[in-house]
Image (cartoon, rainbow, N blue to C red):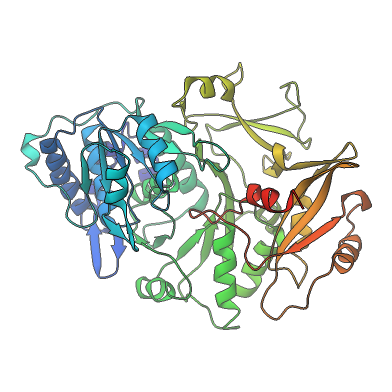
Length: 511
């Protein structure tokens, strides 16, 4: 990290970070979308005017403001205007509907709710009215406006909870995750520290800004002073023109995004699909080693992958100058200030190289959950967040994730890692993507089920052929799948396109 970025990373609040960057490079662009460009100086000025408009509407420091908006320049402006006021923000993913939105509004006790109106054929304002939301206003294009001279002073400390992010809530109600300005700055600093970008780079936001990755990425832009292209709706190949037009050097999002870029590259072998691209980076879902090797080999760019979650936006990240083996097989290393402890079932630390449950402590870790009971269960006696992820730390400090505790398949008393099998399946030429789940079985406790997508034109897979391939790759006999399901498309969420394994268990568990 450069000296300037390091100094900016010490900012107490997000608003202080915006002001300091605007003073340094007021005329440099920060957000690009279509024909529109917003500079760092323009960001500060627009946010102050919008903050004044919000203040005129009755928004005050500590007011709870929920917003469900797409990835647009206006969304970032509204969010940082709320940060200028010191309001408590509750971002809601735009794809969520009555159940998730209603829960978020009730649990956060939102006093205001910003919507995009009708967006992509869905009336979000009508949804808000139906749910009984208070003080609903549309913020898709025209934002509130006012005189910044009427504003109260900005917040001066960044350790109060001012952000409520929501977990996916796949099988139960979402959890409200409590963050501070400082925890978000720490998360973005981790990302910036690892990727080693410069003011000459051009990034991209192909994910919902309402996701925890939104501030994570924006903090990086503010620290290094470079812009990012915002995609309101990401789809390939349609989005490629914008990548090329703005000369994007850094793209990504998650493993699914890497695979989409690879699919486009394979349509044009030998011709870079994005000529300026030099780095793919992301996290949020497991990365099979074969995906790393395919990106480097076929796209001619580096790939760095990291580990983060709503509770801790950035935990570890691969560095572009790390070894190929570490970039392919690990989640990278933590930055200074992030402690990783791997424990056994009793919560005792285990030696390097030994699998156990991953626990975390550091400034980027959330303050807990909106529900105090959930917070009590989430941290151990030493203040480490209990993640539910399984893995180990190498002697070099690199973290290797081997799965989730709930993804450990117990077959006849033997623990089987779903990720180990998935990584091998990704090396099969007839497999485009794969997920492995445990299904209830009266005799074995659980059986191993492989669910795969096949690439276009691939020969039909059979269970016998697949298990034969896995045997040749050295997989132990007791880990071989006993069931194979082929799907046209694995079920995924709408944020980072993570495979929803609970839907696979629901679909195939009763068969």
